[in-house]
Amino acid sequence: MTGFLHIMVPHEEFELERGADKLTSYRFGTGAAEHLFCSVCGVKSFYQPRSHPDAWSVNAHCLDEPMDLSVERFDGRNWEKAKAALDGE
Image (cartoon, rainbow, N blue to C red):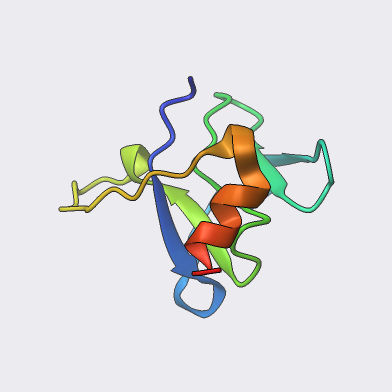
């Protein structure tokens, strides 16, 4: 419902240029994922997903320049099964 279109970016390839002081963090469920949003406008432009602990999930809708993307579906309602499929198990 938030319209988040995930782009996984390895931590070493991600640089937040400004606005870190405006980020607010929250966790729920297992607490493994760190959800970040702007405390001014409420937009969630990126976060640390539990499915990819070595990468940030960046919201493609928040990028200045559009990208050509191939979309891979992930069933968050059945997280464990979807993660196993993602890992090829």
